Structures are given as C-alpha cells and as structure tokens.
Length: 299
Image (tube, rainbow, N blue to C red; front, side):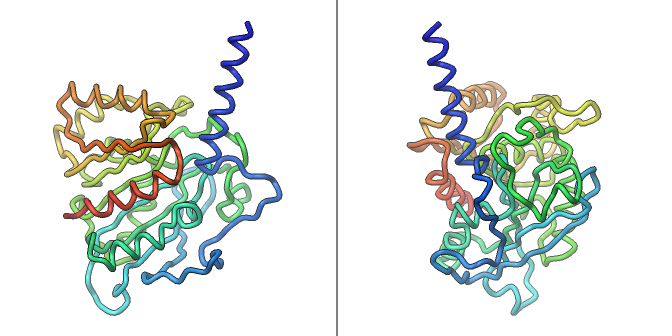
C-alpha cells in the first residue's frame, strides 16, 4: 500500500512539473502578458510583431487573437513569404513562445544570419473557451482548469479560420511546400493531426516533445482526434508532407510514448527525421527545437 501511495505522489508531482512547463500552472495573482508589452530586459525585434484577430467558426469566442512575426524587409517590398504556424502547449496561449521561448530573439538571429529562409511566423491561440467572456482577451488557463477539454473543436476549424485568414491578410505563398506547422507538447500532437485530417495543407511538420495520446475523448460530433492511424496512412499515401520532424529529450515524460510512435511509423515505412536530446519536457529544449526546425524548413 505504501508503494502505491508513493507512486501516486510521484506521478502527481511529475504531472505538475510537466503542466507548469507547458504554461498550465499560474498563481491567481500573477500578471497576464500581452504582445507588445516591454520585456525584461526590453527587446526590439528586427522583424515586426503584429497583433491581429480572426473570426471563429466554431462555438466559443467570436474572435481569437494571433501574434504575427513579419521578417525584416516585409514592409519595404512586395515579396511573398512562406509561413510557419507555431503552436503553444497545454494551457499556454499565443504569446507563450515570446514570453518563455525567446522566440523573437532566436527568430531574428536565424533569419538575419542567413541560417534559414525568412518566413512569416504565426502564433495563434487554440485553447478551448466557452464564449467571448470566458476568453478574456486570450487569458492563460489556470492550474488544471478544464484539463480534459481538448476535444478537437478549435483544432477542426484551424484551416478555415486561421490559415485562410493569414493567406488573405498577408503576402504568403499559399501552398503546402511553403507552409509549416510545429508546436510543443500538445501543440506537437496537433501539428501532426492538422495535416493528417487535411492532407496537402502543410508541407513541413515539427513535433517538439509531442504528446501521442490526448487525455480526453473527442466530442460525439467531432472527428478531429478520431482514427489517426488510417488518417496517417492516407496522408503519407496521397499527399505526403515534405518533412516530418520529431524532437524529444531522453528524460521527457512522453519519451516512451514517442518511442512507440516511431516503432509504428518505422513498421509502416513513414519517413521522418528524429532528433533526440538530453533533458526533459521544458523550454530549454523547445527553443533549440524551434531553431532546428527553422533551419531545416523550406530548404
């Protein structure tokens, strides 16, 4: 009995650590952060950061906010750019990569240093909220709030709501070869599912410490998280992405699950690039993963 209790406490502490790193745990009195607020220390990006809002076609808030990074030179010319959709983790939100992942600094460095093809980087909010009041201008979720709410509702509208808005608002190259999606933890899982559900949308997929299984069941009328294996078979057979990247730390909580995913993909002959690093489920890994993805995408 004592062993069972000890194991339960260990699992709870491990879950808290993972959820905290993803942006789940936040004291009630801690501040909210919005794009454009001064950083500490202040950082002025070489690229331009823009706040925009897109309409929502599924239940929840009527509009959602996204943060858009426009590379240096965007405003001076008429050139079209590829797009990277950068997804947050569970209970993170659209500025998580800026606040915790040093996204502006590393993106500037990679692009201005000629290490990657300059691209528009879009950071959307894909949390589930009940309505516009619950949305609270993209508030971050508190500890364990609606932990099992990830049911595919918001994700199912990502292409028609987010991607369509970006292609109609910015000078993008609107095809799969010039469109990438990547994310951390649940965002990595969502990156795979987005392409598997609508093959031919994203030519490049980046999964950073991804979950392989969701914690809840899809809604009764929601197809997004159902039948992933036949969807993957169709994705790789009909219109396969140019590149699929799986990056994870050797002590990550999801490492055993991703080992199973890789075994399945190897058995099926699905191509992917695998990068294993030290460490676990946290930002000291996710920022370098993002840099690696930028450097190897659109080449």
